[in-house]
Image (cartoon, rainbow, N blue to C red):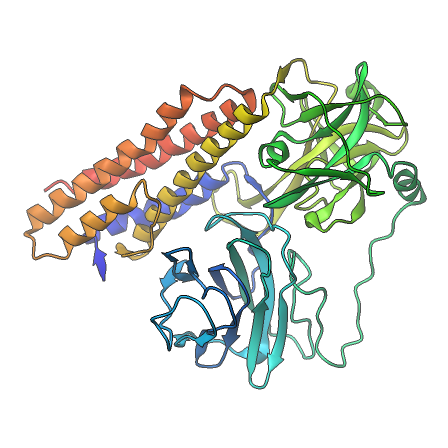
Length: 520
């Protein structure tokens, strides 16, 4: 059952919160891995998948066909909804008594034309609402009779959240069923029968091709149980090191490090850079590691050609992404080489000298004008790497402690996302759906609040119940941050925690405004 908040609170949320959410999540265009807005009408679907499942699209709506293993949303006792444009939908199955096995759900009514849809994959990962595309078996999209079939094989172990869009297409047929941009693990460049058009691959310069050939043993695939990244072997300071991002290392518990020629890299003592998202591991001397440029300000210039070499989208293939330097900062270099998810930890190489000037780290997508705060028609994408030559201090790393702090930060960020999701739920229509918010830190209190609101309460008692609930959420915004501050010791995570603290303060401020409007 849905339980609305009073109209004055809904108005506060509607007038202030939509812009707040955009600025909170990406205050400066924010780090992101995929752009989800290209202007075309679309329906976004997100579901927890464990095993082969098929979403069918009809003119009446969408429904699930489970093929084997757990049904969508079901995994190890969990019963998560499918989200359709952020609205939870709990499919009703023909055999509701079983969580696994072949079955078909009811139809979720939505106006879609299966003959005029394209598929675009946004994210595959361990958390609802996450970013990035973890490597999984390719999704197959095709027409089956009058229906569109989106088959998610997911034969790998464990469940994953898949988020994708069904994008309305108004052009002539035939047309590609799968959008190339951000398609990730979806089936490659699927086209309708008779479509002979192909998209040419970007040209690779002779210098870039020669760099790959000469550095096969220096380019490293980082493969983890939950994803993939890149790294490289470089001569840095007085030693030889395997270098990647700190955020790649944070998720690298149980990781395998292999070079392009298949050799497993034996790593030594690790360290994390202070003030930078860079991580290195000592290697035995030998070979011809990549050289690192010192004095990037003096030896490289804006406009100089660069190439990023790395494991794009975790596909296990080295890509050569060429571009140029478009900005230099004290700790960062900005390039227009179009690196993608999976390229994190790749070397940014100055083509003229063949030296590494930075480590590909993140991209930002600016969807709002900084002056007017209005949405922009064409989001601006910028790509950054951290400079190696500007690192002044390295922190020795204990793997167990590093990964423990990584897990604590992941829990902090997950709660931030869940608090934002709760506010977004309120901001749409003032209603909260039971079962839509499952984080154990807030679920019990939300359920108690919904139970109270389901009773016949006087306006005063209803307002007091709302105030109590929102006061709890306001306190929750800071309690785990305070606890983490006593345990987080690595600079990389301390900087992440500081960012989370600022975001939580903004969220707490929104809760305070809502509480003020609920006073009886």
